[in-house]
Amino acid sequence: MQIFLKGQDAGYEAEHTARIFYPAATRADTFPPEGDVTVALASAHALMALVRVGGKVYWKTKPALPGQNREYTLCSLLYRLLCRVTGQRPPWGMMTGVRPVRIVHDLRAAGQSEEEIRQRFCGHFDCTPARYARAVEIADLQRPVLAAAKPMDYSLYAGIPFCPTLCSYCSFVSRTVGDKASRALVQPYVDHLCQELISIKEVAQTCGLNLKTLYIGGGTPTSLTAPQLRQLMGCLADTFTLSALQEYTVEAGRPDCTDAEKLQVLKEYGATRISINPQTFSDTVLKNIGRRHTAEDIRRCYREARAAGHQNINMDLIAGLPGDTVAGFARSLQEAIALEPENITVHTLTLKRASNLVVEHRESAYDDVAAMLAECEALAKAGYRPYYLYRQKGTLQNLENIGWSKPGFEGLYNIYIMEEVHTILSAGAGGSTKLVQPGVRHARIERIFNYKYPTEYLNGFQTVLERKKGVQEFYARYQHPETAGKL
Ligand code: SF4
Image (cartoon, rainbow, N blue to C red):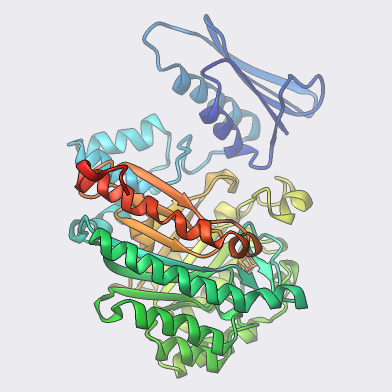
């Protein structure tokens, strides 16, 4: 499928409306004379949606009227045509944003009634009542967390962009540590990361920021050796006041590089929450996605984590992996529930450009994903509550990722980053610092990016440190306007 857009109001939103139905479609610069194509056209007098698929052509038009929200009207025209042509009824309707829960928070803050919010979801966007109810349920649960947030709080992210092997669906900036050249990068990387973390502490202190949560993610942080983990976590313990933290998460994602010793190091150096991510408990599906471990390795890792004293464990599952079925996904879910982790996060497979799966599977293979997500009601029955939700571009039917937790074990970092409650300072390759204007609803957000890949990060490290000035400039602008631009 290709997407062809023409006219000022046929832009980003129209493209993403088409991608709800055809997530792996490519953009065409000119109208393709043959093949499958979805078209949105906005001229001065008319709006038109057209789909040519399997040699048949379908279209809808509307006159362009004065005072009309032309972009919305065109997207709505396209959405309804695509529902008819594909026979699909996307659960989130034509809502394309990544943060549906944020809409509930924002509309409430703007003084809208619950009925007006329901209308916005179920009328304007055509969300199903179930998805609207889920967004409201999560917003309710998050309310006290958001209310307790302070303007000068921040969270810290440290990225480890290494993994034992590359999963076939991976769209992260991750480098395998399978070969000698890659392994040789890891130690200098850890040394530089520690330096960057120390510089972040200095900047945060200068700005008067208070650290609330710490997250070591990746990649796979446990692809570091045990001594390297000690070095990194020791640096964090020496640099920051860990006793003041609300939460300290480390992703111990994959059992093929996580052993009892490393799990012990995480505990010893203060991690309060870890993530062991099966993605699936099917050995066949694990093989399909390029993982070189079995479901039994995941169970072993989980037992070792409990033996090391970890009392807050998250497990990630993915709906829509190649070769999985609705029944298979339900079995994985039941296996995860039976282990009784405090958190279970269910992701929908995303077809991103970086992933090999885009090439191999295009948009055809994932018709069962919505049915897989429906199985998640088993989590509610087992006492888990949904506490954060987000969507990513390129998921089939624009479906969601939801973090579920036992009461009192909600992952705060996840809420903070998703609802843009406070600044996230990021260290490491691929790190993206997100600066949130303090104390303001609909805060201004600015970003500072680190280099994407480990080699670039190491080679450009002085620039990485230099860019930290941007954090001070940002806070100076909002706290001391008189010094802005003079740092
Ligand atoms: S573990 Fe995660 S980051 Fe690493 S290759 Fe797999 S999907 Fe990518």
